[in-house]
Amino acid sequence: MTTHVPIVREDEIEFTAIRAQGAGGQNVNKVSSAVHLRFDIRASSLPEQVKERLLGLKDQRVTKDGEIVIKAQAHRSQEKNKAEAMQRLQELVASVSVLPRVRRPTKPTRSSQRKRLDTKTLRGQVKANRGKIPT
Image (cartoon, rainbow, N blue to C red; front, side, top):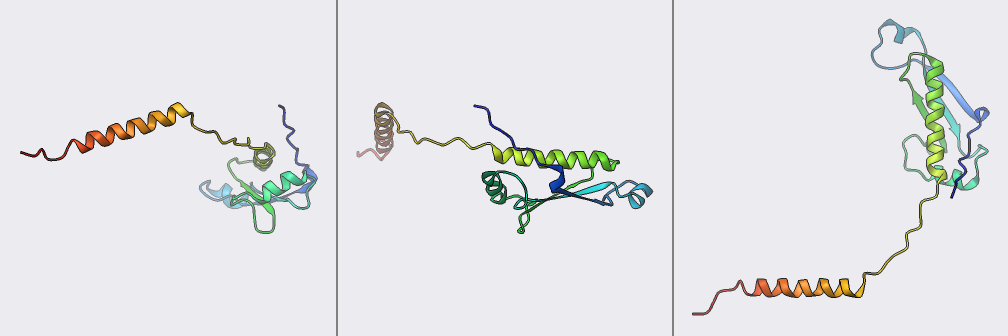
């Protein structure tokens, strides 16, 4: 069973260059190498089922307005951070595009039920025999 993973179109994504946080000396204060990626789920061209699953995610990257916000700042170059943010968005979309397997409830077999009850009664007898012996 092959599943089709929808590809996010680049014209539906908004990139914003920001200054990265953390250590990095003067470079960090001068260069806007970190990237904010914004993706509006409702306005996208993704299939409706994928949109619903994305909006239903309990993920801090999904806002109340139905936007995905990803911040990438691992690399020193803006291009690499853009590519990483795009990859993370694609992975997020791919994770919801695969349907979870339907669980079919099963019953324990008669012999396993009987075995369980037999061991319970045996254990109860062992515990009952632990009482004080009348003299």
